[in-house]
Length: 278
Image 1 (cartoon, rainbow, N blue to C red):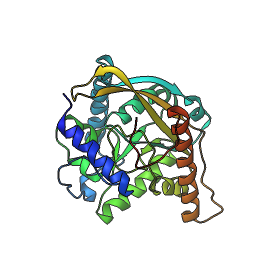
Image 2: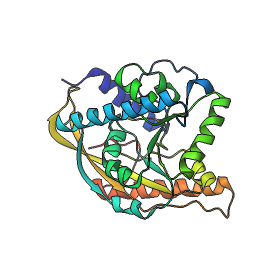
Image 3: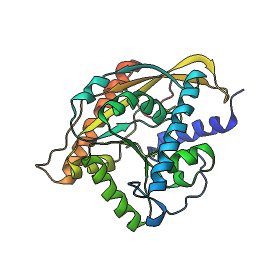
C-alpha cells in the first residue's frame, strides 16, 4: 500500500507544476530556526567542530554503504565523470533535487576522486535543515554542510566561506532548483544563486543531472525504488567580461539547456510541464 504522505506530496507537486511554482517546498518541514553567526562554524575553525565533522563523515559513509547494500539506494550507472578530472580549480556542482538520497549518491561517486585530489565536498543546505532532528539533522549539522540563513550577518559569513572554499580548490554542491520535489524527473527552471558564486570566485560549474527508472523493488513507502543514472557534463565557465547579472543568467540558461536535452534524450519525449509522467 502506498504511503499517504508520499501520495499527498505528489499531488502538491502536480498542482505547483501546473501553476509554474517550481521553487516551492512540497514537504511538510518543521519551523525554521534563524541561524545566527555564532550558530555556524562554516570553515570548521574550532577543533571540536573538526572532530565532529570527521566522525560524522565516517558515520555517513557507513550509513550510505548500508543503504546501497540493502538496495535502498541504487546507482545503476555513472556517465561522463571523467569530465571533472581536467578541472584544476575548485568548482560548483549543480544537480537536480528529488530525494534526500541524491546527495548520498553523488558523495558515493565522488569519494575516490576526493581522496585522490585531497579535496573536500561541501553541500549547501536550506536553513531549516540545520535544526532537523535525528540522523539527518546530525548529518546536516556536521557533514561539511553550508546552511543558508535569513540573517544578513550569517549570510556574510556564508559568502566569505564560499569564496574561501572554492579558492582552495574544494567542491560545493548547490541545488539551483532550490527545493526538493520527491521523485520528480523533469528539470525545473533554475535560480541563479549557484552561478553568482561561480562568477564571484571565478570557478567553473559542473552540471550534473540524475535520471531514474523504476526497479522491481518496492520500498517501505509502497513506491518502486528508483535506480539512478548520474550524468556529468562538461564544465561551463562564467564570462567575466560582462556584468554579474548577465553572466549568471547565461550560466543558468546553459545549465538548464543541458539538463533539458538530457531529459529528452533519456526519457525519449519532449519536456513539457503540466503533463502527467508515464
